[in-house]
Image (cartoon, rainbow, N blue to C red; front, side, top):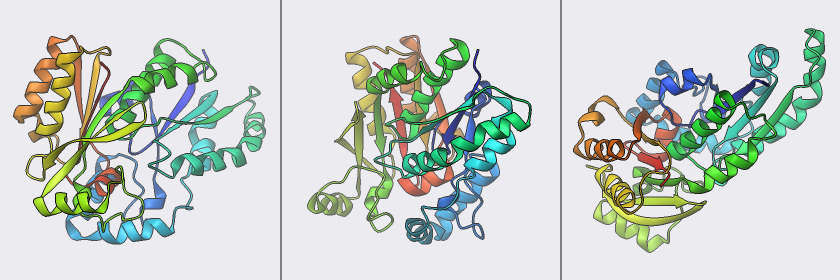
Length: 314
């Protein structure tokens, strides 16, 4: 079987055990971190903690302004290829977050086009004469939905042996089936990312009313279409999202065993949250399993502290 390196943006929300099981690689987000202030986001415990600390010390505001000016910084794609992927796999499939939310897709596509002619020469010098395949694919999703799609792609390749050429169609088909619900506290502070928000744009009057009332939007993404479907509060951004998910699961049962959820904050207390326990019971009754993971530090800054995301197929 052709063995691929599956490379992901750090904002792909999955439990650590899944990263380890499928041997998933993370591309560090160097464009979002000043090297003198924060290390590149790679989902490691130490780096995630450093990014989370920036949420409480005011660094996130300066990062937002800085990142808009530095999107062309290197993401260590060439270094990752030279050091690991190029000599230990037959190809690399880079799965990016939704390109309409994130600059990574176009950036990595440009890097891949530049690097591809060099790959065979490097492999030949190492006495590896097979052709190395390097491709970039858009997941069309963010946060927990992005992770759910990656898990399915990893399963298709690692467990079922699909090659890089046969992954695209099932990946696109599965992407359209994912239902994603998420609340974004950063919406209440449009000064953080006024030009490139991590959520759908709403008119100024609605934004003002929601901010004045202290409510946060809950969005649903289905088949790449996003709409406002409810409201949450800063005190509890979880229950309204879970309520919507449970209602959807009552109407149509799970059609894929995994329900993936992520949270921009401490995960352990979340296990005792009444809404999470209720969601876990419903998912278990339908023969599925619920995953919980912490959002990466850069996702927490981009979407807001206590952002909550849940993705499933029903």
